[in-house]
Image (tube, rainbow, N blue to C red):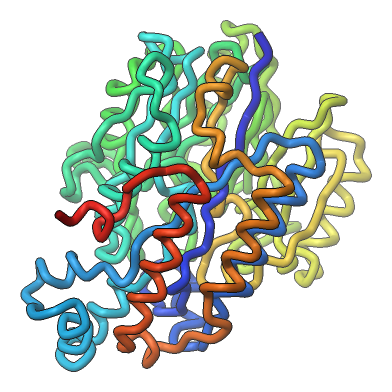
Length: 449
């Protein structure tokens, strides 16, 4: 049976703003307080989805969250009507209002960890929503994320959903941004690669000194157990703490993998050689031939990788067996990175082509092409069981573009977040979106009695 890797891209929400909320994310912090353009951001994301669909890749869309999150503000002691909650938060605790308005759910690489049916003990596709507890503005996402994923992947014969791990530091889980799967074919058993920044209980692992390590070994191990993965099908590796301190807040900022290939920076991991040997041996037992392309620090410094988001790219398998690398415009703007990419494609290796996309609105907030998509490997039967409303088509692209133009502002500053009308606009837009995507009631305002 044929199988596919389907990329479900996050649809940028109406409150897309530059709040500078993500300590450790260089782009997020450096662009704090600038005015954003939610309409342009959503259009840029949709354009990427449409382009990949037109190239023949399976493409889906994942809905944004309700923002501002009035329920979260109420839980922090702000009372009154919804408008009063927003007004009081703006007056007394503006940083909390900014956090409650974050559109960071657009980066759905952090939404969940997904294991395909070929890897799991019960033969179903497993989803575990990420708790994202390292940052408050993201820790409030997982209840809605779980409902949205449940509405997309409803059929219990094919899909299993797990609640987020306990929301404590020992089980900090950032989802698929620290998870990659290697396989000979998407429908065959593969090797799932979990990258962690620190261990909660084992002092043998060095920790970064400047920025927090968001993913723990214990969280990765828990997800593997929940998904019923075998020891033969899992490899754990530690992210280099020195690169975390240089702004590499997730593994997908310093490495990307697909099929049998890992594309990574020389400084990405701790104990790289034995880790690569383990991946090679385990994939070989599953019929695969592991390959690795290492980017030397002498050609691309970590700083250049972070600023260009070279590794926060999409590595896609084409019909002829070659691979396509989707990178942001910032890679072309960086002379050293662009020179390296030209050399890479000229060498005749597994990465045959590089395509550039303008994702400036997302990039300025700290997320590139890889952040914007959640990868789900599905066989033909499972793909047929997915809610068809979320699979990208030319008509859906047109409908969503028109929806964005009707409902999104073209400028949003921090002061605008205090406008109660923004909540009304967001809810009106999302109520319509759930009908377009055939999701049913998934948002808190839709679930209220």
